[in-house]
Each structure stands twice: as structure tokens, then as C-alpha cells.
Amino acid sequence: MTAEPAVSVGGLRKAYGPVVAVDGLTFEAPAGAVTAVLGPNGAGKTTTVEICEGFRARDGGDVRVLGLDPGTRAARAALRQRVGVMPQAGGAYPGLRAGEMLRLVAGHYANPLPVPALLERLGLAEAAHTGFRKLSGGQQQRLSLALAVVGRPELAFLDEPSAGLDVQARHAMWDLVRELRTCGVSIVLTTHDMAEAEELADHVVIVDRGRIVASGTVAALTRGGADGQLRFRAPTGLDLEQLLSALPVGTRAKESPSGHYLVEGEVDPALLAAVTSWAASQRALVEDLRVEQRTLEDTFLELTGRDLRA
Amino acid sequence: MSTVALDLSPAPGRASYARMLARQTWTETLLTLRRGESLLLTLVIPLGLLGFFCAVDVLPTEGARRVDFLTPGILALAITSTGFTGLAIATGFERSYGVLRRLGATPLPRGVLLAGKTLAVVAVELVQLALIALLAAALGWHAHGSPAAVVLLVVVGTVTFCGLGLLMAGTLPALVTLAAANGIYLVLLLLGAVVIPASKLGALEGLSRALPTGALAHALRRVLLDGASLPGADLGILLGWAVAALTAAALTFRWE
Image (cartoon, rainbow over all chains, first blue to last red; front, top):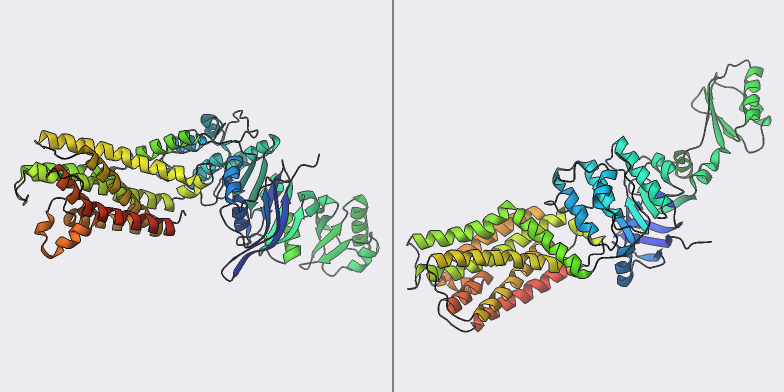
């Protein structure tokens, strides 16, 4: 069965005056999967998601959310019922308590989740009687997540869901996102945290300066360990040409900074053996040898020459 | 964090508009009653002024009994405070707290949101009008005129002040709205023929008659004090304000 994608964006463009925020973005978020839109601040993630949510008009391109165009009024009304949204600056009535706000919004849906259980799940049971203004940043963030999913949506957009969360709350959020996916909910989340994308996402879209620089599964983007990394320290100035001649074609090696070596390729016992015998032939001692997988950060750096955390 | 069993499988759909409207109305009313500072404007000041100036004989009342002169003006002030001042301040802060954005992501239509706000204003006004009428009656108030004319004036006045409140809240930052709404409340209290008759304002008399509170107070006084039918000139002024405010609000209101 090839299900229609939850979100499909083609050639999306949006400028704010002279500033081009989104410059021809194309991607798909598969149904029933977690898609992470990953990129540094200012990359155009939030603009893209807000256009998909129907909060913002686009300048050009095509957008389909659950098969509907959020640029039209009728589609927006239909999507409000089927799509949960956790906006970045989403608030609540300052005079309401957390539990009251969640009950108010739950009441606008036909089959809402039970409010006490949802509060409990997100660690908000004790904060239920606290006024919105007195909640901590992390509690407000968790309430915002609860508000996004309380209507039992088919698709949820979560814009920077882990911003301001401590480690424990972040894991609770991750668990809920995984469970939503297990229950068949499609998720599109934005993050600038590659660890979060690696942890949660089935599908990653890496955005930089309003363009897609890469997309695919985490495994494909990091090349699934088939293209692993071998790092070690050894005396500076060893002959890498000699090493490469002993390794399969396509394997790459470099010394950077001096005394620190990196070999990229299929990391298998043969590679390890080749490296150690090569070092021995040059009477060098290999130290601190580590096998690592490429991370999304490596992929991003390679594609843009920039740091994802920037 | 515990792992409570939740059935997260999709089951989308919205509640009926009637249910949404009931919830929004209840929430907005609850919020108004919770705001201590708004109770000061909506209840304490109007009732206090009525009681004080009935007890102390300092006001020129154009030959009428003090309570009969004051009550229509106090009713106009009450409508000004809830429709304009209270709504402007609350809506301004809701914008800055992202409430309107949050609710914009739910199936709640904007029309139902605004209808809920309007009904909450009406609910608070009913409480205000009842308490003012009770206090006035205890002070010996004799009302004249047609109840239908009074209801019509109250409705048109409410629409006018809600329009002005939304116009201000939808365009100015929350803190500016807070300051300006309170400042304008004071100006309307002094110049709006609430306690001081327009005829005693000298050169400002014409301005007083043209202000929405002045027009409403004058019209209510013509009906409740003099037993007039509907004062057309004042009603015209109010309707002019209503059309201008609602048009401007509709054109300029920003939800975020």
C-alpha cells in the first residue's frame, strides 16, 4: 500500500520583503512516520511549517497537507479538525490554569483525549491548578504539546517541541511522539538539535538558508554505518597514500589536525587490520582508536560547510 | 513521569458550534470575573459613584432628584467600562500571550470566538445593570420611559464600545492599550455626562454630546428621566461611532 504522504511541499517560496526565507523547498513527509525538519536557526523551518499549518500565505509553490491546500480557507477549516499544531509562540489565556486551558481546547473537539490522563502523562498533573503565567518555560512547552494532541489528530506539527525542556521532560516528550507514531499519527517536527532528529525521526529533511540540502532516512543520510569513521591518534606525518593503496577504492583518509587521523569507508575487521599493519610498517603506535558513525552533523557540515548548531 | 495508558489513535472532528460557543462564553465570563482590576472598573467605581453622589449634594442635577439624574449616567459608564475598557485590556493581553494564535490552531472559528467574547460582555453587563438598578432602587430611583428603548440603547452602546475596544486592542501593544484604555475611561467619565451634566461643561458641551459615552448617557437620561421615546440624534451619534469603530477594527485587527 502506498499511502498518500501526510505533507507534500513542492517548490515552496516565501520572502519577507527583500529577505528570502524559503527558496524553492521540496519535500514529503510520509504518512504514519516522524519527519524532522532539521536546520540552524533562521533556516526557514518555522516559516515552512507555518505555511503548512495555514498560518502564513506562501509566495509560490505547491503545498498539500492530508491532500488539501492549506492556502485555501475551506481547506484550513477542515484541517483545523484533523491537524494538531504546537506553535512556537503558542500561548494560553493568562488568567486560566493549565488544566482549565486544556479542558477548554479539548471541548472544541469531537473525541478529545481524557484531560487528566494527558496531564499525568506529560508530568503536568501537579501544575494543573497553576495559572499559565506561573508555569515554568518547560511546563508551558509541555502544555502546548498537550494542546496540540488533545484533539486526536491525524497529523501533528510540532515546532521546536523540545525548546526549554529539561532532560527528563524531553524524554517524556520523545516517548509521547513515538507512541503517537505507533498509533498511526503522522508527525512533522522542527528542530535544530541533530541528536533529537536522530533519536526520533524516520525521515529527516535538512534545511539551510531556505533550501533543502539533504533529505532521507537517518540511516541513509548517515549512510547507515556502511560509511563509518575510524579515528585514531598517531605520530604526525604518516604516509596516507600507502595506507589508501591497501584499502578498497572509495575509502578516504586524512590527517587533521596533525596527529589525529580519520579514515572514512566501510569499517570492517579488514580495515582495522590494514590500519594497524600500515602503522606497524612505519613503526608508529596507534592510540585512542575509535570506530564512529557519521552523524547528521557531519552530513550537514559536509553539505554546507557550516555548523548546524550555529 | 508515569506512563498512563492513552489511546492516541486518530479520531479527529470538532465539537458543535453551540458547544464551542458555550465553552468560550463561560471561559471569557470567568476570566472577566477573575480580574480584580476589571471588577474595580466595572462594578466598584460605578456603584461607588452612584452611592457617593446620591449621599453628597454637590452635583448640579438640572432640577432632577439626584438618584434619577445619576443612574442613567452610571449605566452608560458601566457599559463603557465593560465593552470598551475591559474588553480592550483583556484582548490586548490575549494577543501578547499568544492566545489568539493558540485558539487559531483549534477548530474554533473566529466568529465563534468573537461571539463568545460578546456574550461574555453581555453577561457581565447584566450583572452590572442588575446591581446598579438594585442600588438605585434602594436609593429611591424612579425610572420612566419605554424598556424597549432602554434595551435598544444598551445594545447599540455595547456594540459601539466593543468595536472601540477591539479597535484599540487589535492595533496597539498590550501595555499601551492598558494605559490608554484606563486614560480614556477617565476622560469619558469626566466628559461623558456620567456625573457632570454636559450643560455645565461650558465650551466642552458639544464635545461631550459627540462622545459615545456622552451620547449614551444623554439618551438614557432622556428616556429614563424625561420619559422620552427614542432620542434619534443621540442614537445617530452612537450608530456613527459603531460603524466607524467596527469598520476600522475589521480592517486593522491583527490576531497575533
